[in-house]
Figure 1 (cartoon, rainbow, N blue to C red):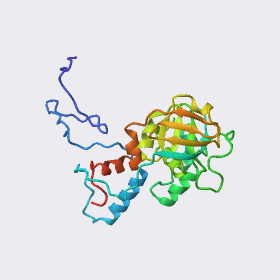
Figure 2: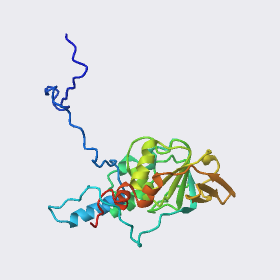
Figure 3: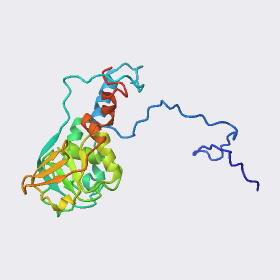
Length: 262
């Protein structure tokens, strides 16, 4: 059998493998100015988008054309620089089934009531050895605003509900030894929680209920119960995205896409 030329490209349809294309047809290049956005996005921004879309004219669709950046309104809330509260300590390999079991994924985060309910189930999949519960029974939010974790936090599935459930429960930040990459990405994209990394095995240094402060600007973690301080790895470029409320809010704030009010 004769071998195909090394420079020949063939295109076929995955739904019809018998489709034959013209091998001489050039493959057009993508427009380099095409705006590419991650597939995950902020729950808060999703709610704003749906509300804006429902109130707009039927023949009008939001523009994804980049526009010039505009100065933010003086009424805009300033990004948080520190979090203070009680911490909840978990160990290694806390997966997304433990953060939010699959049976609760039918809850729609863009619905405010279901968003609150989603928070009530945060970390409900943890083993019974974790006492007290992260969210007490019949409560919608947790009294623990900071989670201290071991290695590989957020492993398992790619469900976006995991950081959303933690954010809905009132979690401001997770400080872990390391993260599963998809959980870290989803945390940034949704803007729900700050996924911070410690330089030491931090879960051995804290106990659930310790009074804790996270200083974002100084990349510092303070355990007021023990009087010890720890250095955190800088959040870097992910910080402004989370500050804005997620990837879509950040894109609007920086003028990469049109704002919902334009």
